Image (cartoon, rainbow, N blue to C red):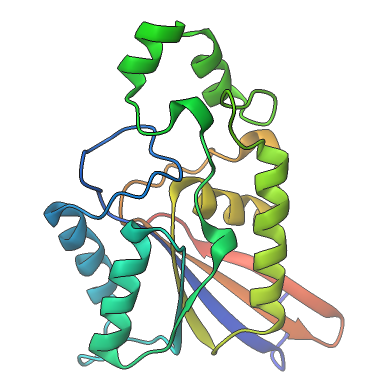
Amino acid sequence: MRFPEAEQTTIDLLRHGEPVGGRMLRGSTDHPLSETGWQQVTDAVMRQTVEGHLPYDAIVTSPLTRCREFALWLGEEFDLPVQVEEDFAELHLGRWEGRTHAQVFAEEGTGRMSAFWHDPAAVSPPGGETLQAFDARLAGAWQQLLSNPPGKHVLVVAHLFVCNGLLRQVIEQPLSRVLAMDLPYAAMSRVRHERHALGETSFVEWIGR
């Protein structure tokens, strides 16, 4: 149900572009964007411009370099305030951090890694963050953003698990379905949040453009 008198906040979720080093189990390992990655996210954001202007009032970013450097550059280019949200950092992958799938398979076999991608709510990376703890920190940061947004239209620059995790919370899917959305590098998704006479409602307008 839509409420015509609702107070509305629009939040665009942008997954970062390709980092230096290409595809790996990066997690909280702090790699910068590659040249290709910069181009990917720049193109994604510029598609939102109208007559040379971005629609955003503010930017919120993960503290990790592959998100933060682009967010700070974008804020400077378009005179937008930038907030760094520590709890939008990527899921910590423990012993898998900074390694390729092939390296993990060679050293540990395929069992735990395959089980993790099948159901990350049931299996955690060795020495890594549990999905339950990750989901809880995301929920706290997300509710804070919704209750005190820095503008009517906000860009969030974050990661694969973060963007998927936030979308999962909005559409109320089981935690085991946290990776159900296929979000490539620089994928953009849009959430609208409404405050109205009956309370509050969030819904996803589109995913992964």
